[in-house]
Image (cartoon, rainbow, N blue to C red; front, side):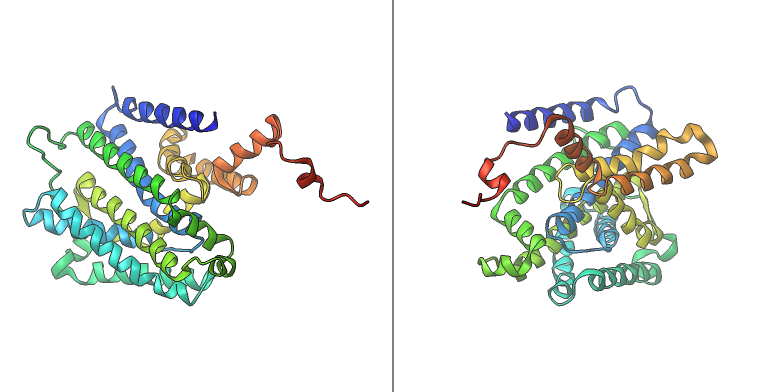
Length: 326
């Protein structure tokens, strides 16, 4: 029954996503597309942080790698789909290399390592202007054209991004329910116990970074034709913190957490525009209250309310109460 309800919820969300841009202008459609793109980036970080328990503050740098790689290739005449392959491969390899420090350092030390990497990528993008355009960035990246349909129109690009998001979510669904997914969760809960049970924690750690980074690269490859202009400031440390906020607000370690978190971070400020100059204050206050009272995110809040009003699942009395003394 629970599985049936889950599939029903997925179908309902997909229908809502299909209907969302109908009748909307280009700006609202652009905002909705941004939500999908950042949901992909947050999915990758959720795998690294939420499922595998490895702190990363470098997701924006992988968006940058994916964006600049695809932008340079499409400007050179490649089709976007062809440029996507080397962009994702490069992110996978770089993410694999970045995962090696996680084999030696943990916690805030690992956070500082990934933070330094994000800063390094930002400085390279800003200073190597012969390749990246420096502070002027790159512009004029074409949107994918498939002959029978072009994504130049905002609504068409939204549905193209939605299709990519559905495929990426389906792959992530398979990953977290595969033996790899169980390995990621074991690594998060107790690395020593996981290793004693035969989990190759070294390989699982590297995979968590590599796959999560690849999702960041996919988001970056979509940002490039969406905005059609990229510059180093778009991928600074602040954007990594923004993606981290999406994961935490939505619910780290929950499959639908990144979508809800990205919705709050991307869509909520737009809904508060009517408050004019106060919208950022209200938005910040709401996020603070949310994190204080629901540290497990919005999905964690739903679980808490479900347990409170509908009761916890029944378990065996001898397990719940413990052994009785005779």
